[in-house]
Length: 627
View (cartoon, helix red, strand yellow):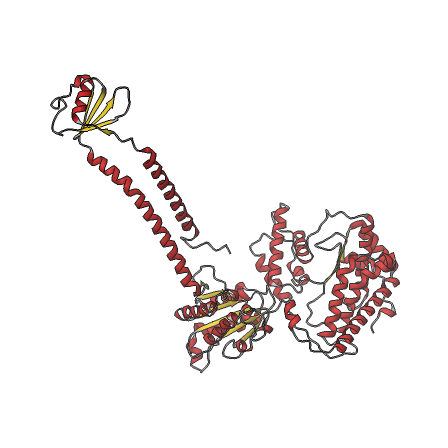
């Protein structure tokens, strides 16, 4: 429940002729099949019944006897309709130039109909009916072959690079659109000059850098800086992710690397940007990153393309990662990634500049203090600040505000930092009292201890996954953390559990302090293992490789079982000491604890000024002081 400061395009359109064309081809094929099926039915059941052929003499005899109602003459054919029937049932042949009377027919006995010779029309109709299925089947075969050819082309292009080409878009990113990171921009501006004026550097014997590695935590703007380099240099910019090189088929990754660099050389001078290069550039021989050699083949091809036999190509490779420690040494040597640009979390002036950029196109009220927000967001990345600005706009719209108010900004900051309020969560009165004592214990210990960060806010309203929050914010950005500061953090983290124990009794402690204890254990172990702040193991570091569980399991531990036992003892000692200091502070200021508890039950949320007023006369017991 003890909260530390948080560290916190339009979608690409599918290419023309993509999925809609495939869907259209499927519709055409479906319609063709329906038409073909209809023609089969017509051919089977729709054709008129065939007439029975009789001799001309018999036709004359029966006609003169009155057995026919109608005779239709078509060329040399006589179609005969028998009396009482509606369609012709008999057929005979006569001389096409002769009349019925000349053939001996008594035309007064039946109806006579003379049609011109229509055999050609009948022939064309029959021919069309005969050829239409052939045309439809041929069309289906054509579409099937074309589809198969497209799949074949896709298979043949499997080894082609999937890098996106930028550089011709109108809304280019420039350095003035990237706030902060002055040192990083200075290093990258030299890269821009290399691309703009290569002869200037070649004249003094300077060699253009092959690669620039951007290293920093997530959300600090590595990709945006890379695009700003391309925008400033006004050169083509190929962008691809490290994971797009490797597929399940052997050799595809290396083929894509070759194709990417071939395209880049044709467009030189240009920039290749590989995001998350650690996906393909991990250290070889570690057994991590894949169960086959495909990733290593891809890495080998990148190494050769960056610094192989072929020289003099005006192509710069930019790469971004937040795990530079896992990259292969051959990738980091001079001649490949010549420069390593560190992009850290922004400091207060940079945070203010970033906030101004993100709020620039939003209607901001005059009461909004962005400088105060920049002060409170220590440890935030550029992505966090962008998220705060967006959340503030969303909250303002939800509240029907014409402008973003200070309340909207504050609510957005707290929502991003510690999660949304869950006011609808039902809590019993007993749970509220326990939560109030717990949060008051955190606040009291954190306020009294001299090297702890000031209390920013205390609330018993559930937020995120917690039942309540005590929020501490540093007054200024910190570069280092001292041993006594760590110890004060440990004590205030245990303040909630100790307050429950002192007030409610040892048997009444709750699960509300589980997360606090976990954080305290992590901090204590980090102090001993990584920072050398132990008593028995002072100035000794036993670094454990960070990473996934499988990596930690297979990594060799660099210390013995006896040392591991001492580490556990040191961690236990730090936790015990922190608990005793928190207990001393709470027992020495029980009246102040009760006042804050009552205020929390009354108001649910207490701000920094009110907390400071309640704890104005709180004292630091001698047993809780470190000096």
